Image (cartoon, rainbow, N blue to C red; front, top):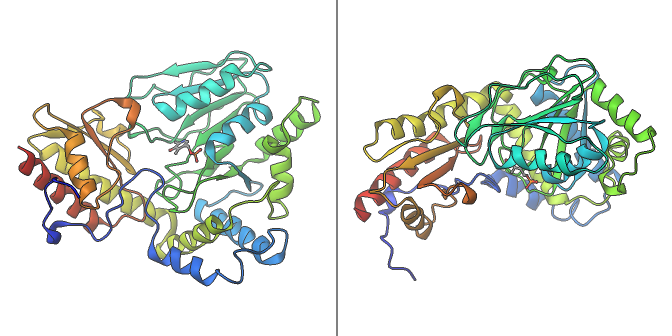
Length: 373
Ligand SMILES: *Cc1c(COP(=O)(O)O)cnc(C)c1O
């Protein structure tokens, strides 16, 4: 039991999950899971039923992303964080450059920077809430990397290919894919975990690889550089072509991802998803701009993420207390990124979150602020 105020039920959203990952799973995804209960779950991932679902996910991702000719959908277990280690071994030839304007971009930078077989990384930083101008082209850099959406701060970065000789553009789309528009031809590797806009489970990564990225993987693999087996991108590419993973994937996550991709395509694919997140994030930013107590954390409207909205509060409002009231009433995960240490709420407006739930959430926040005043 709790002594926190009880929000009047008519103000509450239908679904109270607004977290930036894991994020809300739609009931239809659970329905798909139940249907797969006795036919697919608990069966071999080396047999047709699971290989077929992996193949369908690859096809649907290709359709959703508008995959250019020659690109391939590659997957592997472990998620985006594990992909960083794989990339250090299998994508970076000698030096990477990173744009680091929050936790996730900085973490990947730290991985390549510390790899003993690579040169020290070039890291272009910007304070949380802002972003660097863009990559700086340097002669010895062979991978340029940044997140399309920095989930820890709610700052979005354009995805435009770095035109430099024999260099790859590698984009972390973990919280962007499925909710933000992208031109895949502007990237060589566009990678993500599916527990954000795709509302599935973590522990696996997917990526669109360009022909140049596939060639880089092949060359580095042939170069004799030692790679732990589970991190080998060459093995991931080889297995993905057979709709497999090197080791056993979580089957439930595949079912939920497949269902979400089918739903997104039925709604209108990437243009629909991007329009929806523009609308739902717009509700949050407009509300924050108009609020007496709150304002968008990201000062420049052009840098504001359409999928992760960060809102700062005046000292008069205890944002952590507001989040506690919401949590006690089943409205979950609007706490800010822990290491940011701000008087803030963070609201994910991923593709599965409908505008009416965002409106209800904002009503609940206003109500809680009033109640705590
Ligand atoms: C969530 C997130 C990650 C980490 O994903 P894991 O699946 O936990 O490894 C990496 N990058 C970004 C941008 C994220 O939002």
